[in-house]
Amino acid sequence: MRILVVEDEKKVASFIKKGLEEELYQVDLAGNGKDGFEMTLNNEYDLIISDVMMPVMNGIQFVKELRKNKIITPVLLLTIKDSTKDKVEGLDSGADDYLTKPFSFEELTARVRALLRRKETQKDNTLTIDDLKMDLVAHKITRTDEEIILTPREYSILEYLLRNKNKIVSRTKLIEHVYDFHFDSGTNVIDVYINKLRSKINLPNKKQLIHTVRGVGYIIKE
Image (tube, rainbow, N blue to C red; front, side, top):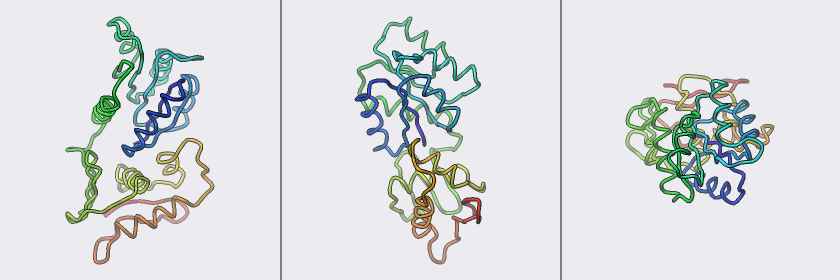
């Protein structure tokens, strides 16, 4: 899943980004609400984590701008303000949750998982196709109950394909969803990772699940 972190303190932003990436999320950074808003117009995010006190456009204004433009991505606000009034203002602006600084990373990730579960339509936190199963909580992939070990990047690509199973996913969409905002889309790295995934997923004597749609992209289907 892809998360946007909007935070003007570089050390805090770097800390959050590194921690979330270790949890297998893809993370983009923005230094203020204005830049964050522009990024949401050009990219698809599963969750937004935003500081409240920021230059140019603060977190409250940022969330209001998102909702005004019909962007319904869940938002978790971070702030040093801990009064009930401040929390009410944040939630009334359209945010989905509110976390006071300083916070433990364990609590942050718990809130992230909770917000993502709200928008998750799959039952039991699993994605499946044929005999392939992805456990989104344990980050475990199995085929016919035999575990398949993937790198974090391979996992992200497979997750995105499974969330769009039976639909053609373009190379551009894959790059936008699983790579950094500034990634060079002119490389063939997606093709390399797809080939690696195929070698692990499309097993001999098993139904081939990952297919290439020439000139368009990829599809995972039975």
